[in-house]
Amino acid sequence: MARRKQGEAGATRDAVLDAAESGFRLRGGAHASVESIAAQAGWSRGAASYHFRGKAELLRAVLARGRLPLLQDLRRLALAPGPVVPALLACAQRWMEALQGDPHARNVFGILAWAYDYADDYAGIRRETLALGLREFRLLRGLLRRAEAAGELRQGLDGHECARLLAAWWLGAAASCVATPYRSGVAARPRYARSLRVLHALIARPDPADDAAPPANGAGAGRRKPVVRRTFFGGARAAPGTAPR
Image (cartoon, rainbow, N blue to C red; front, side, top):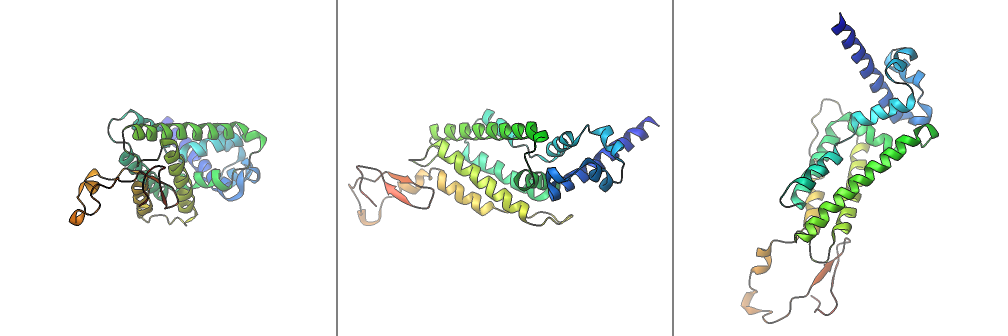
């Protein structure tokens, strides 16, 4: 009997969370009330209040259920030895696949990106969300500075620049992914792999073997190879004091 009651309580909590996730995503925090959420779940306000003390606690539970483990993965990478750039980009690919295949993660990103109004009763959640994003960016920046120190990045790039680039890619790619309609029961196809390969080519130092091959017919012998500083807009410029290409 006790197990049955626990199962029923868990089912009630899940139903309320599902209704709250849908309500916050479609109507925003200001317009989604506890009463409307409970009614959508098929329960009374008292049943919803039994599990959640108010709308802010309900929103916090929705965000916790659908939030991707970016912070945990970045911490794990920070403690792991070995090259940073390929491990980081592989991790980003897993985040995208999880976002494509998990409707809870998609809704949470949509709530934070488009349906989150900063009302007074959500001020604590807003601070928590901003603080979490800052911790994630600092870990990302530390990883790419480690990559810079290890010589993994292209000459002329620094870890902070690359961290900003990857963060901007993640926000844009995730927003585009969430804006794509989700079809339940359909396996998500891996997307954005091409853009990740472009990012890798843009920031990672080329294979030394590519530069080791001698020029044909001895062309260019004795010439000083220019140091090129790459930009994030597809161009390149020679560093001062070196010959342009």
